[in-house]
Length: 98
Picture 1 (tube, rainbow, N blue to C red):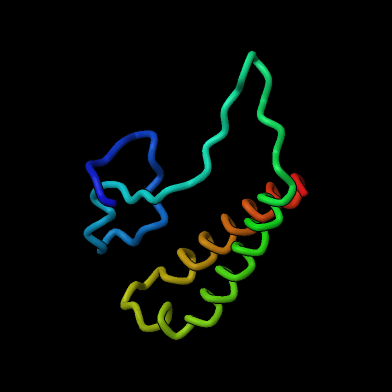
Picture 2: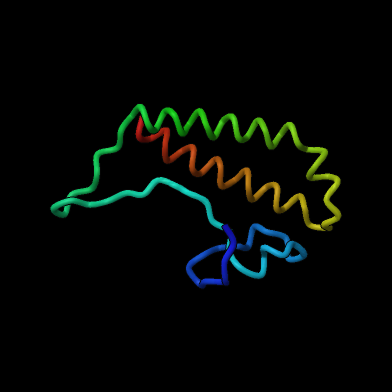
């Protein structure tokens, strides 16, 4: 889904030449709630699922290295590194919940 720019949304990982970089890109993601002032207890099975999903996603990106190289962006390596870095950060969060 694409939409207008919003200060709360970080679209900096998109190259400036992509039309989506003028706005925001979104997809579904888990949400976390508090009930009676208490954080939700993480589900270890769900956390393991997301760890596996992130691993598969990283493998898919690594398998598309040629795609990243074929994009005519002079700064594609920093974009690739930023994506991988965010995946590592997310994986660490979910691994802590297992």
